[in-house]
Length: 440
Image 1: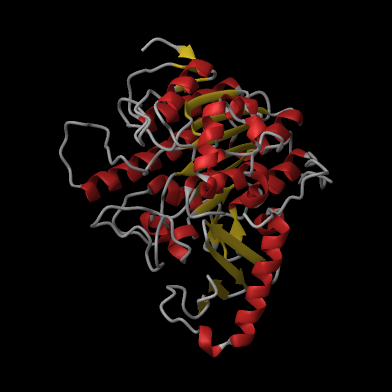
Image 2: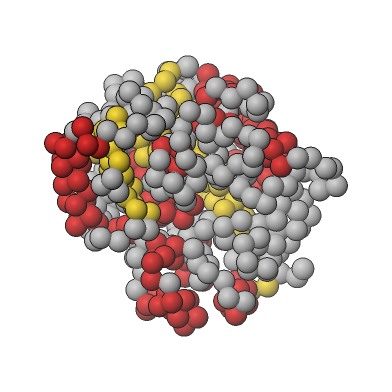
């Protein structure tokens, strides 16, 4: 397919009825400010990696990354679905603060869709007035690139290169066919971008994205860079490398994760090849809980999955590696959220977030040094009309169920009636937070 203007493609997608879904001193390390490589899997659960206990999937590269860095056992996505988490990731703020957009920021077709779908306001993407982590790092002198999934707005104004990224290779929607690169969630249009243009090419999505990532590293080895590698795998459609090879859904799902693991290994190999290993912070995590086929245990002991406010919907794997800085083989049980990457990256770059924007995330550098996190931290989730709040080991969902995660991480026993004082405290914390973020 010939390359076409981004504005033209957006118009085509709209007509086809698409639905949008003060700086601290930098950590002192030898040499320049560190490169940052953030690798995000799509719909990957804790139970699918060897270093988290899986016996079904072979993930040697991720296991090695964990052995050489820090593995988090209490890491959470900001939401149980793609777009909310990515909005929080980009801004360091609860998505309820940053994902609202005014009608004036939208094209007429999208404006009409917003009026018809008010309950999905978060799905419009990061508000144009927000400053993203890519904006911040670019102003600090970093070369910024996104390779893979954007999913923060199809309208032209929300294009990632309008949100601080110097380069973009990948897709703007929620998912694509792994071989044809046609959007797989109702758009039925090519969604494969080279910066501002849509241009197809042959190849399996995971392999193509890996090639772009290693090329980005090679081209920018002499300068500080931020690489956001947002993989499609193992999000549906369930497709392996060879479309002609017949496998069960569970076998295909495992293959997709193993190819994803290969990608992590090739990125690590590229960093070593260009002598960037000790100059680069590498993070691997998932955007939300899994949606696996039958026959695959994707979440281990945790209840629920993608779209759920049980732990399985938002407690996901996270590994952080930085040789010489992050202790090898370390494990953190501190509660951490996706939005914590923003202040961490800002600190490393010596960059100040906008003074008129409250950052909700927590700097992770004390944890990475082995000093621990913030005691008694309160975590919040809201998804549609559902909500959850957690303080310490106590977690309240919808003011109906209460769990003690320290004693019951699988959330099997509702102890709501036994602890009215805890329920009242958590209920009040949710009310206060809802008022602060605007009730969305």
